[in-house]
Image (tube, rainbow, N blue to C red; front, side, top):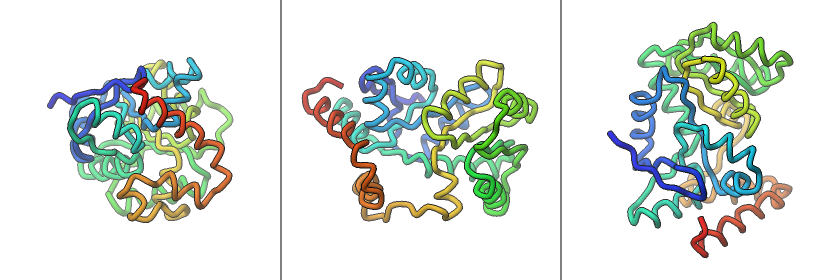
Length: 239
């Protein structure tokens, strides 16, 4: 299946019609090729416009998916048809479920030591995942980790270091010859293991998870300026 893409700013974002199609696309077209998936939201779009280094990192993603409702709305307007929002944590979890059923080899990077261990254990228990390696986010020898990942011969590597640190590590692994499929997952392990509560469905169904996080963490208000900038550029059709 050919997946249509939509250009938002200078980013070509996949216009998936459902979460299942996104996972099928990854498993069918991106395994074994040293490809990676990157979530795109309004904040990343604006940061990419402001910082050429971030723009370059994002442009290296083979699967850019719309994880922010603002991005979804811009894409839907340009295509004149609905586009599904693909929440990163849900994409990762469904990908892990499929990896377990197909016995694909998985490497888990990031999170604190306890969260990393809990994530691996839950993936094995819940989905029967074949975990071939893990490393929490507090490593000091990056090169040793890269070599460990490559030696594991993992099919899928998920990296939870926060953006852009996780994308930088992913690009280094791929540049050294890794053929795994990589996915940067931010704080997903904390949500998966129950250490962080995800936004209630009433917020997520309306695309207002950002508002829930803001209500829980008022200090995030300064980061929301990018949302205002994005909204203005969208309204003036400059994206």
